[in-house]
Length: 119
Image 1 (cartoon, one colour):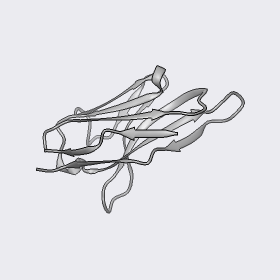
Image 2 (cartoon, rainbow, N blue to C red):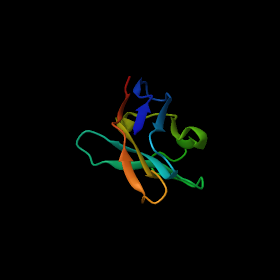
Image 3 (cartoon, helix red, strand yellow):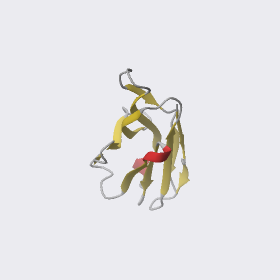
């Protein structure tokens, strides 16, 4: 249902762009977001965007990361700039969507993509 891509190894100060496409039965998407989980830590919200285009960011990534979406493609992006070693984590895509008329919103998670920031 959710396919994420774009992770990899990057040096400190570098950039990466993550993509996540939702597929299958989709009537509407209420929300799409990115979470991350570093080794030994809890999963945390990185950035989110609503159907109305409102965005929110974790304090640790404000000014460095930008979330955007392509509604026609049911795809959300996370542009990550000025990456730091502490950004190293598995990044997960998350969405709340309505599969079809008459069905309530459902939550889906992608499998995750690894981002490693290291010299």
